[in-house]
Image (cartoon, rainbow, N blue to C red; front, top):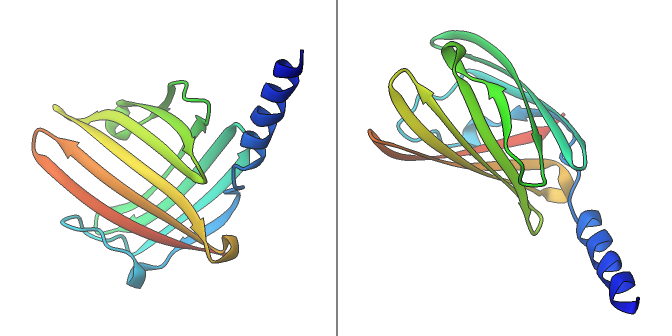
Length: 151
């Protein structure tokens, strides 16, 4: 009985430790690094986070025009399916690693399958969201750093 109470207390403490990622976030292009990819001219994300569910509404503008999409995840490690580019599906899992959210996504762009691994973390008292992204595919690998400021 004591073990069950202790286990429940630890589980509750672990859930409480997850930071709230909710907010409207705007990309700070000067602090970001898109590597070999062209940087967008504008990128905003509205994150709605009620543990274990996270919804991310993204708006992006760049050389290829405007893009808007929504992705939903659960932080329990279960696979979530979201619409991808060109009608393809993106399959993702999300889980906490301490105070960082790890999201792994597998999808294809045309015939090119790829994996995208994101690490989301808050800093500056919750005013800055940093997303470190690693792409890998048959065409190679690439890294990005996106720094968002809370609006």
